[in-house]
Length: 95
Image (cartoon, rainbow, N blue to C red; front, side):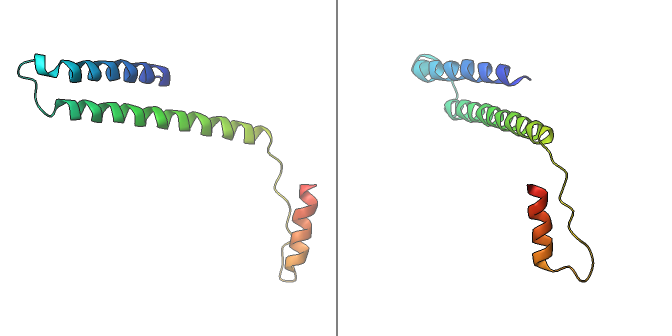
């Protein structure tokens, strides 16, 4: 389901839940726990919407980072490498 469709469904469900809560006393045989279950379903739809929004933001971030990616700095290898030399190589690569 597309994020926009989830959002629209959630909003419609919210309106339905409010209507059920308002008309509760007029609907014979309505289970007492129904309003709580409706709230639970609405919350789940909200959680789905939040996840979809987060995934879209992460996807956009990853695409941007890939387009701006630079090669990793070359750090000297070997037993004689000192931290200061490695730091200098990293600093030089960033410039």
